[in-house]
Image (cartoon, rainbow, N blue to C red; front, side, top):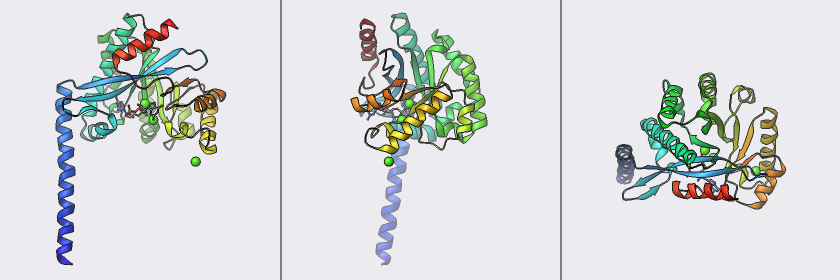
Length: 279
Ligand code: C2E
Ligand code: CA
Ligand code: CA
Ligand code: CA
């Protein structure tokens, strides 16, 4: 029994060491990724279903790893958040998105806004609105061309502070959206206070929307509530005609998902926008 106990213990510590080593390896290569500019943004269209107008492009970060190929954000954003590297990565992402916005504008392409995802630590760094303002100025971009997506849980954690920062961003003219809506512990009274323009219905409610009455009820109630508060609603992860029809019937303003397009590399996204213009 004693021997087995020791073996279990050794196995456990060696597993822990492996996990810790892997983490450290990711952290180190993330550091060099920042230095070597290995992050790329892919863009997913957001479409107004009635008119077919483009209202936005969501920027989704990928890590172009020299050996491992394209790495998706779920694999490295959590480590970046824990280590604080997210602040530097987030700044790079915002700057890339601004440069892209300026380029598309100069090419005469209508993209609406470019939406950028934020992590909690970014929102709370000192002088965050001023930093974004400086980047936009440097890139020659109007704040109205940009949008920020913040999650419900991120804002509800410290609602008073968040409301103040969001207010400052809004006053600058940047668009604001609440991401993954419905998955956090939202308080309706705070939602009313948050100066956001848009709610994004999480993909988990869209997935079974036409077969699961609970999901259908949550989605339609979210749309109705958002409209009462004079906010727009974007549904994410829309893949099928049935999902699209349900959402349109219930007044959803904006649709994002594979039914229109997967996230596209910058040159593909540019071609998509050029095609839209020709329609
Ligand atoms: P999210 O903001 O909820 O983004 C939506 C995710 O759903 C994206 O995954 C997108 O590719 C995927 N998706 C879009 N349409 C469909 C669809 O019709 N069907 C299905 N099955 N999936 C769809 P992705 O690109 O892997 O991003 C995952 C998460 O990583 C994002 O979730 C976001 O929270 C985070 N993220 C991405 N870029 C950034 C960034 O620049 N900064 C930060 N802090 N987080 C980011
Ligand atoms: Ca998002
Ligand atoms: Ca989501
Ligand atoms: Ca259910």
